[in-house]
Image (cartoon, rainbow, N blue to C red; front, side):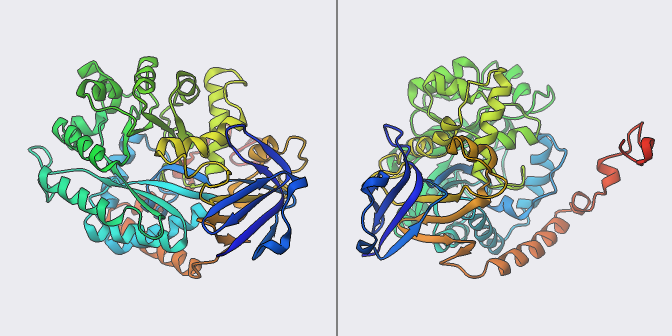
Length: 487
């Protein structure tokens, strides 16, 4: 059985006591952590097959990205300047209709590569497209091959009077979802887990793409199978013509209140974004044990607002973090989300004490595991838990002096400072190289070529070819002081 010793690191356990060991060690045996040690108690090198010297490095539980859409990784850079509602109608729908299973597979490699290289070891992949059994296979296999842990949220949709293009009835869709979950949950040595996506927000229900019967029966199936449900919730702009506010004005109910009225909201639900959740919504969520997933940079880039993450935590809601997807704000870096979470919550409340860097790290590790229902397995460095670990170099020039190492690194470091990433006890990323996958450059080249083709087919070339002048017209004072555009 393989054994690994990580020593001399700044070990942030995120365990129940929130212990930190400067110069500490973590021992791995097989797939699990066998011990976590203070510097003075570090085991002998000779007792291990491999020793990683983590001097000058932060050693933390692998980051948990609880909301992302893998195929968005193909289309970075084309979403500038769009409100959420227009982004969905003008980009998502045209692009997804032109994606083959081969494209889904290629995008899954690319997304997994980006996440592993920035310290993420687990993600929840929220499906926003119609997937067949072959599509699911194309999505989950590549990331398992890379060695990253993925929970795939299989979408529940069906044909109805207002959504005539879906190939399956509700009964057929429920059967297909159950089959996919039973086929894949726990496969690849536990790297593949399954969940469900049941959209229950204003956009989906008002469009007819989701119905009360679908939500109720889907929840019953999720409870039967013991899987988590992911749903976008209370998101979008405050436009009175479209989206959340329009639906709120017409119905008088929030998205959370709608789920409460249906009697379905419970601990199996992960509610995504929650930008416009009210304090009463948060109380409802805390009462039934529903989780909230905050995606700070995604919400900011669309001009959607700042979700009440700090208030959710204060209300007793298990609150975690996600990236949303690289077609939204162009990154899958979870460390960026941690920093943005802290900064944006301070800005929302005009209070620099509302969200500490330590709390942000909790949201990206143990809170994510709690929301997933996997806190007994993931989210902290403790003996008996799965060995999912990220090791970051804290001595890069952009980090600088480490007076308080955790705050200094989270504030100044980057996901690309990852030096080692371990999943299930395997070193899957080492000094810029993927140990289980050698075709990174080929994947990137194929993604760029295929993405350009899909953009053209979707009639979106104008989004790719827009000029600087079109995006940024000259200002009235351009040309003064010797500069054509800026002083």
